[in-house]
Length: 113
Image (tube, rainbow, N blue to C red; front, side, top):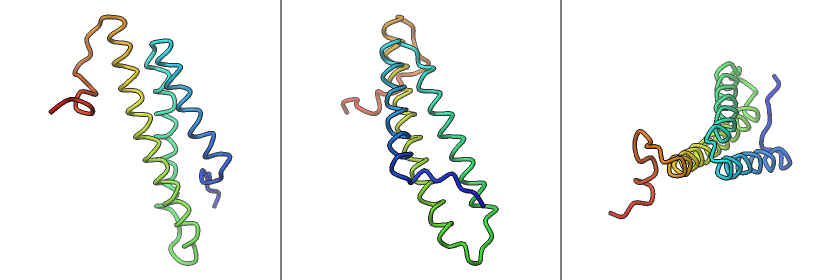
């Protein structure tokens, strides 16, 4: 079974740099759609890795199962980072365009009290 291995150092470096670049480009252009691109990619990777873990035969695939669980942990971490990045860029774009967001997305994150 082929597994898209995101634990390789070069791939992991690219998976960290590209979303951060999209988040900062979204901040500079005041376009929250840019971080959504990486959010969708990490969601697709998460679904792919879950499906591969579910259809994995039980016996003799402990090494592959360990690799998939590591990939899932990386997927969840990157999904969290890009989701927070999206909320930040959305807040910045709402303040610049003087529009109101549905709720104050990140006030709970760094609000006082």
